[in-house]
Length: 79
Image (cartoon, rainbow, N blue to C red):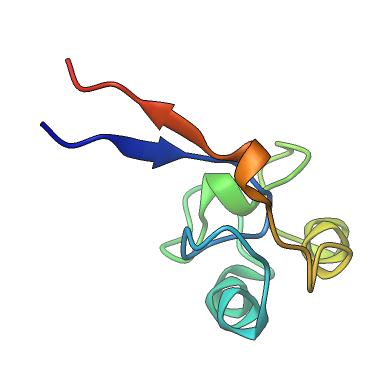
């Protein structure tokens, strides 16, 4: 049996509980995309308005350097 951890931090695109330059590099290709575009990623669209624009970039950028502590990581029991 393996327990997994779950967390959510907008801008943490690689799932390592922080927002760093690796996440910014993953965000960049989606910037300027909209629903229907091959580069559009709904999880990068902070305000869910159908595009990844400068407002979304601002939300990611404002979290640059943020890291979740262990109190924010939740264990998920296997089914």
